[in-house]
Image (cartoon, rainbow, N blue to C red):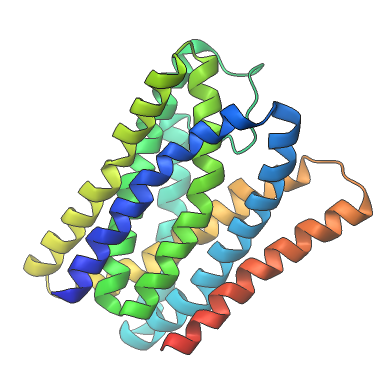
Length: 249
């Protein structure tokens, strides 16, 4: 029962991260963009670290045959790509306002809700696989959610929502994380072996988000060598944090 409770508690914390959008009120766009680039770098490293240090080794150990684990990792990548294509959904980690028409704000909300639903399933499933893996996945999602939610807040503001309404809507879509956790817990109770199948799928999802979403944001930024080095250090730091969590196992 403890893993399920920890999973639900973690998704509640993740849901509250939607309020991070309010942080945009404290910075102008120029300063916020600088901060977000390092947050995005750290998030990319943590997602890669969780996928390759925690999730994939666990999947290879507990999924038989191991070929199935590999297929599920690829499936996780393809599902993420498909969802992104179908929803015409693009994360905006650095707030901009020139490329987003008003209807995109609603599409962004729907896409964010779907993404949060998947995150909730991943977090709950990770805890049921093992508590250390659950902690690692929670932190990986947490580090990813902060820049994402700040970016989403910027999209909603540009879409015509008031600041208060944007915060409320972000919080509402964030509750899909809780729904995802409940679904994962329920399915694990009725489908034998569901969690071992979810872990490699989660790894594929994390790899996709880090490689096709976060890293490209960094490549868009034509920066000086010192700034590029700092971003690389932030990526490595995210990986190191995930590696240090092995001490919990």
